Image (cartoon, rainbow, N blue to C red; front, side, top):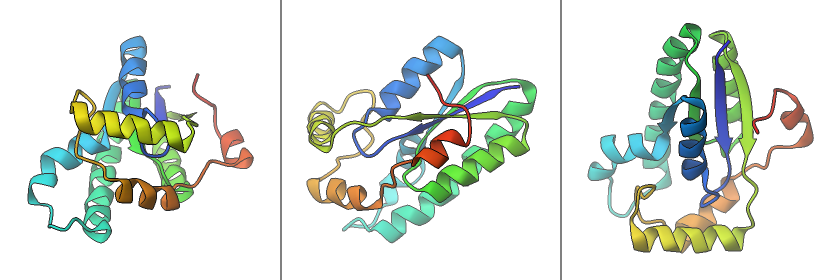
Length: 163
């Protein structure tokens, strides 16, 4: 059975860096939502940027990513889903999709204090390095804080944890 690693954490937790390091160790294929959004939609983003506009496109990308993973998992290819997984329902839907294709979902929850995450975001905005997709403003960061649902004990016990 192939593993599907779900990388979960709020903005600036280090999900993409973690996913890339995990891929180096495991040989898994990484799917990073921000990369898909940057390539497919950011050039056409409205100004000002709106949550509704982004959310609709995020849902489309996630759906397509899970479709592709549904082709890889039955072939024994491990995958890493760097999709943020801000909401419990999003995590549950991904777990169900992974299991439907014979994969084993493994949650990697990155719990980093908000102050540290904001420092990381500021640094990423300034450096525009390998994990940069777009500038995240303080307002965007604070808004994302209101959306993130921390995985509870029951959810964490529902499937094997990542290392």
